[in-house]
Image 1 (tube, rainbow, N blue to C red):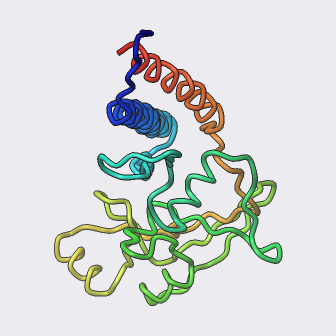
Image 2 (tube, one colour; image 1 turned 30 degrees about the horizontal axis):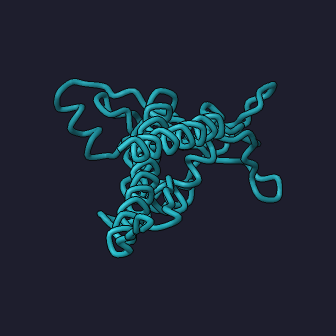
Length: 227
């Protein structure tokens, strides 16, 4: 009698399912590792070129989350924050210029403008309302910038912010035999346009990550096949 070949279809199906899940897990792990690596690389690049803490705005997510697997896992690196964070990243990563509406000057606050608190985009109007004082326009011939200055004032020796010369302060100075120098203090510098910082190049970092992802997937699938 010819030999009989018995196929355990249940075991075969279980093996096929195990291999399919292993391949899907390999793809998910590769996407997760590469996405996190891209986030860290963008953080390091931003921190090395951009002042402040904008580098913290980079975040990443992988779908599906947790231990779940999918046929097409997706990794996303994005700017976590509102229009301000996204605008700041655009400023530092793309070429371009910021110009005022209808040819108006752009007002950039100087240290004497003081702490802005929640008014991060401090305007001359906001400063005038907060201090109850009008700013004076000073045109500087031969330069591409002008100034808005506050008269009858001085600056704080510690913070550099503007302080008005009041009668009470003058009287107190006189009692101490001190004469405070009265100045016209620049509060804003006015410029017709501002060039973008354009210090970081994001696309080459993304391209390198895409190459690493392909290598990572191939390596992990090869490890599954060797088991």
